[in-house]
Length: 103
Image 1 (tube, rainbow, N blue to C red):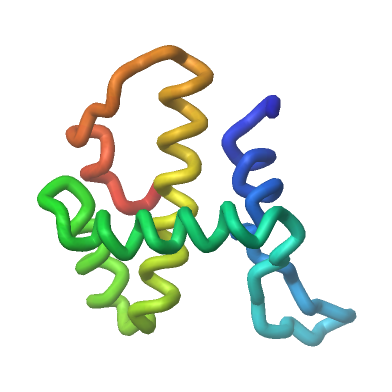
Image 2 (image 1 turned 90 degrees about the horizontal axis):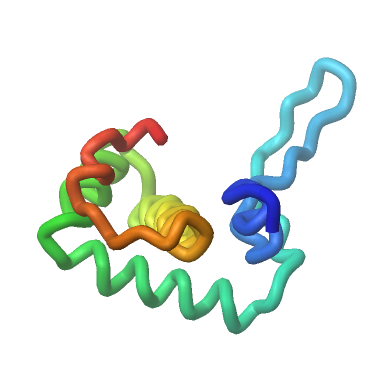
């Protein structure tokens, strides 16, 4: 994969727009990739939300009035992007890089 965005799109965790003209529809998951991979990333996010490095990120999105499922999907996307980065650049996991929730 050439980018983390391409990897996230492959997993099916990317938002699919439902727009037409001036109408801006609801964004939903594309679900285009392997369902098992999406399930495993979601379960990893469920577990990660209870750990010290990932908990503040989960609580940040919950504080923005997102449902727990939506916050967990965001975490799953973040885990996928982090895994892609670690694999591509041959680095180790650094929890300090998770502090900015806007990335």
